[in-house]
Length: 376
Ligand code: FE2
Image 1 (cartoon, rainbow, N blue to C red):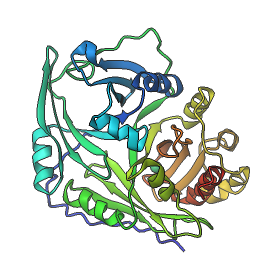
Image 2 (image 1 turned 135 degrees about the vertical axis):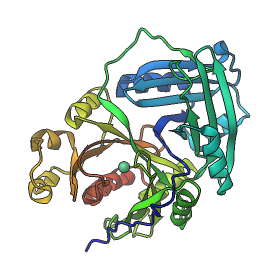
Image 3 (image 1 turned 180 degrees about the horizontal axis):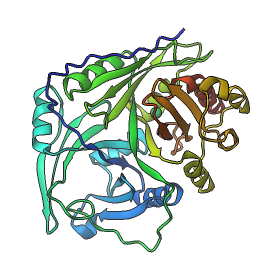
Image 4 (image 1 turned 90 degrees about the vertical axis):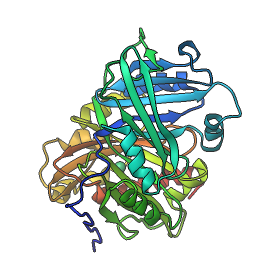
């Protein structure tokens, strides 16, 4: 029995008060930004883009920006203890601090959202250098996570004022990662609908898909999820909440180890998942494995697909189909020692959904890891 439901709560006559052009960058607060940037360059195939720190006049932190196609990551670390960044890392470990969204007008984005109840994180501020200006503002979302609004239409530099170009002699080749497909937030018990309402009321998003614990449960643990999307569909934020099961929900394990709500995974798009995952695996990125039996009935479950089954099975890539097409996806193991943030690699071939047909196989794979950590 499927309880998947498309929910349409939009009022199409309303104009979008928060037009978003997509994800501008994802900023991570980390214990050692220099080494984190090196890891993501090496393992995920990013290139050096920008650096900000004492040498550029920023005294309290160092930030490294790296880029691959339309994907930009920033790693920020504090230079001393006793400040908000250091406290964030002490509490959460390495994790996502900011999901920065590209806008045409960062002042209007901040005014429209704070007017609707968003908690202020950063009032609009203009940063200028000889390459032009970037206007930034920001609001709080779940946990200690924030959304920044980035207006860069009058900026010609590599990243933003305050950063100098980071020219490196170490330039690993791309792994074919293109852009952020979606970012998932884990929230606490009974908090999912509160955050659904936040994205609806404060940011004008719509709930486009809902999954309840019947959809997302195994014999042992469960979770619920609602997918929030902005008007043009460029920005999608699924929200997960733990659900009662025989054993501990994977979302609850995250909440325990992250010490609160936060970003669970960032899904990165590729046009060739077999090549991308092969490259990532060769560079040391570890992925969850489903049993090879998953592939026995794949064809009958998802129908004809362009890819050969063998490399998919070899790499552990999952396939799911919806009314509009199919998608291929795989999930990394957590990229820190805490079982918190991980990455999804996704290739969409028409499908706009999130791999519901894979939830059971996938969550059983996650539970095997959870059990090994003694947290199931
Ligand atoms: Fe995902």
